[in-house]
Image 1 (tube, rainbow, N blue to C red):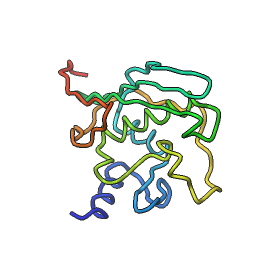
Image 2: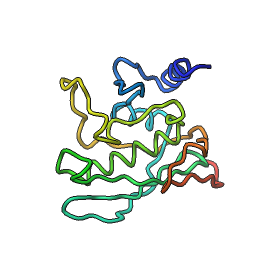
Image 3: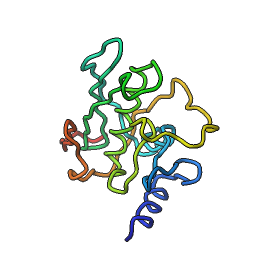
Image 4: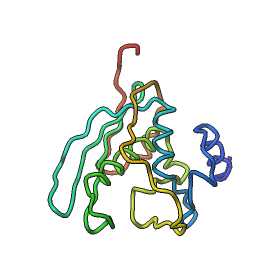
Length: 166
């Protein structure tokens, strides 16, 4: 299966439409934050914990843990005046960490799929896109595919734990 076929399969599995839920940046598919939230909801990915690592006037870093079934992913969400164009560093750090966890759990990085809130480098060309809804929540839920450990980045943790039946 080539990259295009794999990405199409990923979109089909997660009920995504490339024209609506993504934009392209140098050959990478950049998924919109609201599409990542829909994936989390549909897959039953649970937000387990958000811990403040450090926060100051010009930056914020959270340690975020999410899970699906026996799979647990912990990663860092961060935002600062150096990588974020708005002054809501806590909100952006939270979005970035949550999106990274969800995308790791569903193996999106394997297909060259990234979240639009992960980096300011993914500047959208289409400035007319509607904004993300405020106060959206990721509900607790069911189960997810097991991520490949080869998709891990430094500072991230993927572990399999034994849980009782849900």
